[in-house]
Image 1 (cartoon, rainbow, N blue to C red):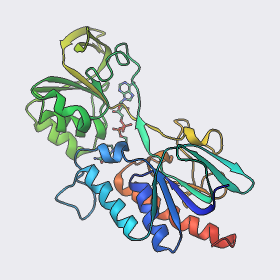
Image 2 (spheres, protein in one colour):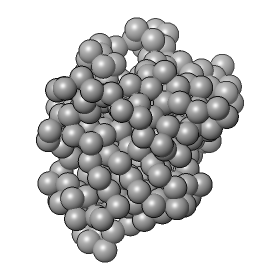
Image 3 (tube, protein in one colour):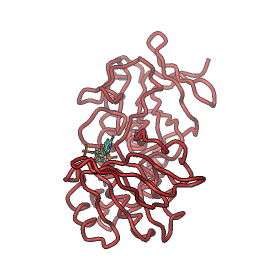
Length: 307
Ligand code: NAP
């Protein structure tokens, strides 16, 4: 039987490391379990984190958070958690490095990009279809790229890709973008970004690699083919909550429902960041969630006399 940890934080992104920082500074022997990566680290450039007005890459921002939390005393274990269950009043965590048990758990596992589900998406994944501009953008220098979506992710990553590609076509199903206004303004001012309004991607075509896409104008119903070298999809995020398998209440997209103290529907379990049901998903809100979740875990342990 593994030792009972007072708090295990699952997830190595902004929410997880901030929870770790606050837990460690609060005197708790907290263990963070997770693997580097995720949408937080994959973001090319972050310009809206307060005080960092010069901007910072997502990778560097999260890595600084890791360094700060570890310096405060957070223990970090690089492992993947596949399942969390409740045994008596303790949580049991199945990981690829063996089982762990904890009195309280903060789930900060983030989210993954939603799939669009169009023909060709599966077939050409890694052969021109991507969900990560930072990872795959450099493969498309001087090429023609399609970006699908109208939110912050699509517009921000289209801006990044426009620095590498010869031409970026942003396809959005409506006549108005959802993205933050300043990102929209930048995109409108970028010469090699064009926007296909009121359009959807019907299918992706090619032989061994993406060669063309078929778009449909939703108003006229007209379909047309564009020659294309790559397709980047940003049609929303899906929370990484499957490791909870029925343990807590989720919203319709699978995000963990919490109260304002980040408490989920099972006592002792908290959620923070993109995996939590929330109207705004930003670095700053993930960090705030993490701080609140850590303090809530400390109070929970104090109430039950385990700290
Ligand atoms: P999002 O805000 O949910 O936007 C998804 C976009 O994809 C929307 O424009 C949506 O269209 C479109 N879409 C969804 N399903 C579609 C479909 N089946 N076919 C065609 N288009 C479809 O997702 P996100 O952009 O990944 O952002 C997720 C969260 O992270 C947001 O809270 C966002 O603010 C945050 N974020 C922030 C930053 C930043 O601050 N710099 C960067 C990235 C992400 P509709 O608009 O018509 O619904």
